[in-house]
Length: 102
Ligand code: SF4
Image 1 (cartoon, rainbow, N blue to C red):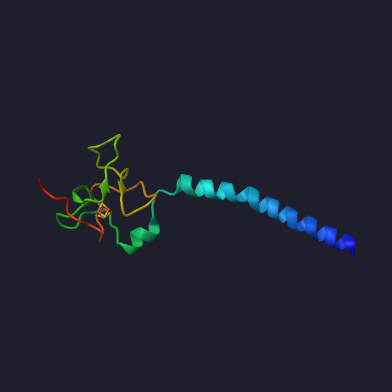
Image 2 (cartoon, rainbow, N blue to C red; image 1 turned 45 degrees about the horizontal axis):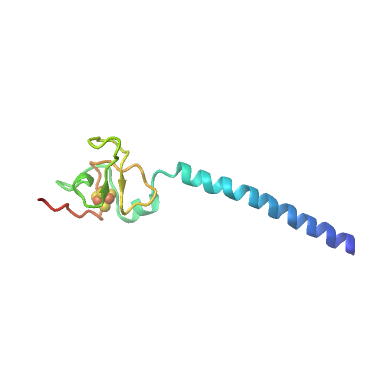
């Protein structure tokens, strides 16, 4: 009976240690490769083209890639899309708010 309890405890510990070893890898890889926030893209109906004269580069939420401020590539960000680094200046979504003109 005591042997069985020891064996069971050992098994639980083994499974627990394996789970602890795997969690950081999954967590890291999730952050490292997540470039698009697909849930928010779907919710805000993101599209890669402008909607008439409305586009990301004219939106208050657009965050320009500092290394390439005049780019037209999918290398920018948006305040409404945490973790998404593939926002193009010519994209559009329902979160569009026109930048004030000065
Ligand atoms: S809120 Fe929408 S339109 Fe505005 S920058 Fe973000 S993705 Fe582009």
